[in-house]
Image (cartoon, rainbow, N blue to C red; front, side, top):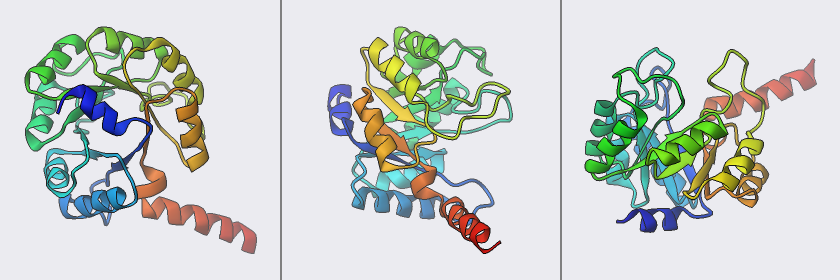
Length: 228
């Protein structure tokens, strides 16, 4: 499938981020493949999945585009931090590889352009996860196939804002000639719809859909406050 075909399938749609951390009840390929199937049944146009094992399981379970990544390491750059991580994700079956495309140095010493070119040679597309408009523009110039606002609010000492960075979505939509994905703290359908209105090609939602403990906690906290 060409990049044009892939992004055509995702246009105006919802990409559900199906991820669970080690130690959580839903951690593991069996659970994430079930989560991905549930998302597709609900209308997801694509899924975003972390780790080679989960990517492979989800690729076998759903027919929609799979955005794969590999969170690894304890440094600043941990979303698919090296070219070898990216190539492993491609071999696991990802159609698109998401990687940190911020201005921070990559652990393997490779530049972003070199990493993107390596993924392209392996036959996959690249989603550049950025935190600023400048990084998004640079990623496009380096050859990224699409840009995502995933890392907005996560690259400085300041805590991330409560809601999505729709301002960044609007700015990047006006600057990029490649698809823009709105991601990060999108918690309601209205916020997702607003991102599309502002020019996002598609929207990525994770915790608001796929993290039952966090969702439950929000309800429980409000009810606890009501009782007090």
